[in-house]
Length: 284
Image (cartoon, rainbow, N blue to C red):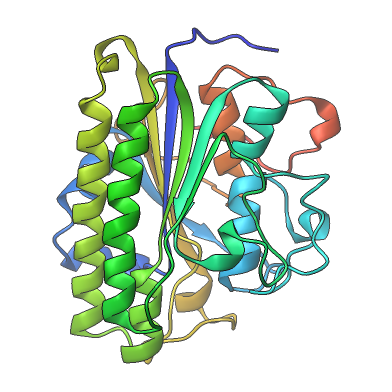
């Protein structure tokens, strides 16, 4: 059931592998602004979910856990995304909404390694890294941001989009969570600022009601790496602002699956019970 006016819009930005404990030390004014207008709160990766990008992002965008979507690692083989699709695909196929997804990690966007996770949004963008290095991934994220800016400005009827930024995670894997990692987080925040500016430049922005959600999938050990159950690895976070989200009022408990549920709620869509979502809209 559709209950919101057609002016409702949602942008979800996924920044891979950002440690929550380091954010207070860093220059992230755009993320801080979202937190000030709404909230930024921790998410603990649940005990059933490996602290890996594949399963965590699948839970974020489908709204169901690993037992349903079937993504258990960074290879997506054996998934059940045909039954539990990502929100950009479900909105386009089942709800008649215009959506996009763009990023640079192949299994999220291409039929590789058991993917794609994003099966059929209205528009799909992929930027391949020229090599597997932190520098190349920074280039990818810059190009992804440019593509997303274009999509945000191109489609006046757009309802929801997902932007994936992967350089922070890659930097941690190569170099650990030192100065380069922290600089990469700050660079991701500048790209977030570009996306927010692109939203504000939309010709119909003054008539639109935007919800913005920024989310990370997992943390990292100091030396770089994840997949275990240490507090640094299993601590993620969500930041969000928009209609119905009061400034400074953070939900007491958050789950990754809540992101997709909040997307539907922000757009005024009551999920069909047959979707069997595990997440719930953000509650404060």
